Figure 1: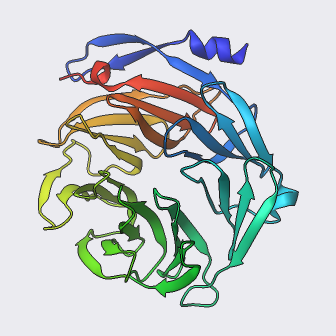
Figure 2: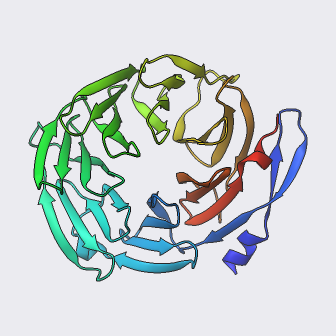
Length: 327
């Protein structure tokens, strides 16, 4: 019944001139409890949900079925970061300092590593797998990054930040990585030898980072008022977001590959579309909530012009971006 209510609900979008635009909401719910963290697969067709019960669930979105569940008793600690490999054969889970690899086919633990940063007390903060599934970057709370190569079975330590590494993004060629942390630094570097290629700075800690697949351009937002769309190599600021409020806080961001738009999510349930050229807000709307106010936990572009969101209510929603833009 819950899914039917969501599926046939209507969303009303308010344009800048006050006109109300009606749009049928394509949405469905997956779980009946709150979701704490969520992460889409690279191909956008699966999602990992970490529930209030501290269970990690893998869902297939096309069939809307649960493929796998890891109980808290199996993981053995609170999951701080997790991902599904690009080939969808393994789930990688980061705890305090332990990184575990679980087989999707068998549901069994295959291997694990115990990691440490430059500070022995540092904990895992973020993880990112290369598109070829041969390399893994693990951001730590002390600003260091553990570089793991499955290809040559090596492990190295690199410290491009002075505080927690909150974001890690790989390029499509599995060569370069972009990282950002609480120190306000966005760093782009080579995985092979940790050579830093460029740096971009914002005033406060980074709360949102998004980039194109080539890592040529990126969008960064800090915890105060810096929201910049910039050229990664030169550091040239292409656009600064403009709005009437003194500041806005963004939880997630997305650069659309074949559209001139930036998509952001607020600290709670609001999404906005911005022009890459002018920084002007072109439209905004709210996600569905089964009760009270839900949070947007992750966002991804499924195909050109179509984005998917997952909420803290475990609701999946698809949006046609062009229909949401109100110029």
